[in-house]
Length: 289
Image (tube, rainbow, N blue to C red; front, side, top):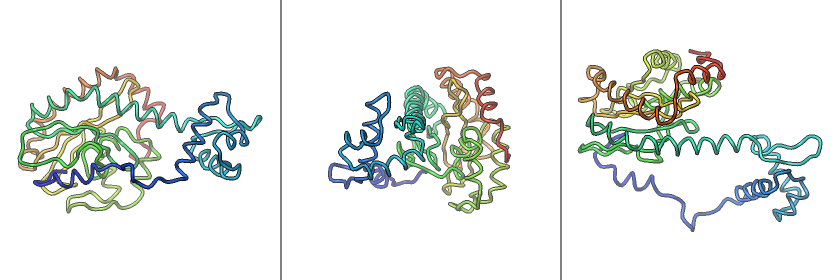
């Protein structure tokens, strides 16, 4: 995650589509359909959606069928009217959660970096990777490539291990650990069974570690950040060179990391009972741990 000369890599990775980027027509049409449905709280039939979107009934039918399988729309079995479904709500909620935790954590990222003299990262579980939302700066000759918007593997980062151990639902957890994982360094845990034991240990300790498993020379320690519902919505991670952050020195980083996590969780309205309730509704600890 850190390299001496990463400015050019960062600039390339941060590039976003501009006005000349090619638009995918089918995606545009799918969004048009959902916006048409959103404007009609009582729902709309196939013919109405086609008329208001300016597309043929056949094209709209196939789009609706796809959106329905992804739970973005649902069809009333009696009236045949289409409405937006919970899949969209879940997506919107994840955006809101990310924005909220980023806003709350912003102050504590720089404070923790200053206190530990190491880099600090705030990441969330997004698809099959860690998505970094923000970072705290520390004086160092090295540059963090884990800028906002960058992704890294779940199994080879302390952030990812925390999110798998505390935040992933059992189905996703089992899918990630279904087969052998790719090696990034000679220290990467690639055996799913060994990683299961590592995640089990992380749950017992309350934190996860990464010893040069994602990049040679880098180590990290991470803790989960819970929201008011008791969900582990993010990982707060300290990242440092292996000469400074290692198995002999990690204990001295735990008190400031714990304090920062607790401060963020307090701002998010977290209560320990909420976590127990959430895990109970989710089915408790992962089946495979």
